[in-house]
Length: 598
Image 1 (spheres, rainbow, N blue to C red):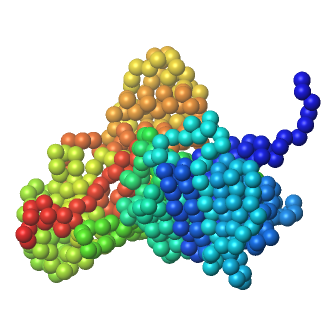
Image 2: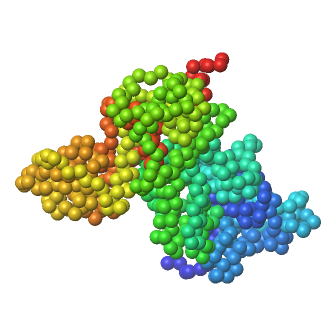
Image 3: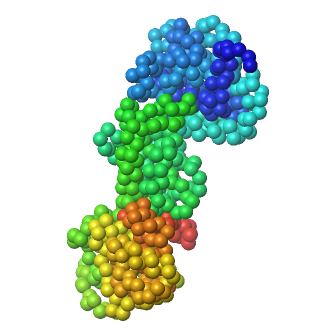
């Protein structure tokens, strides 16, 4: 074995570069963070060949003094921290003092800077080993960093880089992350001489729209929640905008982009009720937290963090997102020039008074389809349902006002026994009646279970069915759990069970199949899990059994009652599996289909 000896400084830097500078995007991230820490108000990035040939970053920050240029390229030299106490309360993006030294060890680097108050700029150059002395240069303010021929002196490492297109895509992602976290800074990105992004300084909403696009902004809801020393704000997309990949997920802690398992789990849990199968949510969120309660010195890339109060943070994020998704208020573009707001009124969800949804629709229809606009007589409960209607789109003012009150409008009829067609002030609404009713029942069951008062309906004639030994054992051992879920099931013999009562909302379900499913889930998860971690899954099963089935004919009164229930139900935009429950088509879009006005 050879003797122990210290490694050369160049080799140390090249080893460190393996962690800090994985690819051009890694170098770009570190340089951009330095520009932000320097107080830059405009940052311009120029890339050649995906950043492999050149990364050039120019900013108008405070600059670096002549006698500090060499120190800037020395490992563990930084202006961000100086004591152990500083390390425990970091507010800057950079602080480790190794990024520039690592980059300089694997590239041809030129650093030009003019500090505020200096008469001219100074420049130093590094070719992987030798470092020049500072020399005068022309620059009025700020810093320009040129990184050329990345990994020119480590050919084996350079071979691991991907195609120009792939490397640029990674650089673009690093650029977007920094740009999202600094909406007050102007950013420009060029690649091979072409401007790819030009982001003017503005507010967070404007920057999010500029980076993620108008589609995200129009299908997302804003949130701003505060608890103790934590604040969470930003935008979360509604489940209908869910993606097949995680390419639109941005979470920042004190303006630092992070990948954290705790945060990811809280977000998944918040979306679990409304996200379909393998789809992924989209969001741009900013967590502000006391720097002393978060450790950012976990990994050289600084994208991993640890939190002092992880459980409290998890609950805070979960409830904030859950609240934002529960009562959506979404801007929907209905034509090329007009934006309207789709907002479900926040009617009380308890047993307090709520708008009448039983007698109003039938009388309203006579006005809607061409009779008197100034009267809404209440019809007797046994009035025959309307089966054919003649739709008029030029509604009286009073009707338009009524439609504005109800975002989902009023029913026109059913399509193939599956969809409800309704008319609101903006155009046509199509509702998947099973999916919508399933969500309504699911939310009602959750509320009832939380209050420990799921209403039960005793059956005049118990429903007897064949059961295997495991199902019989589940019934014998879990009577309390079944009662909490609203079921009374008795054992008649080693091979027979009888359902004597079930939740009132599920009285029209296939009782035998429902009982089999409930017993199976209790057997698989266990009683304690059914009422805690797996509570929502079993309630979703119950709701699916109780929801309106396809091909069931509804009266107009029943359709409108469903629409009104949707408007007062949390998360009514999606069913329990994350599928949309309704969509809207504006009159302007319909006019385009029929080429009206052309």
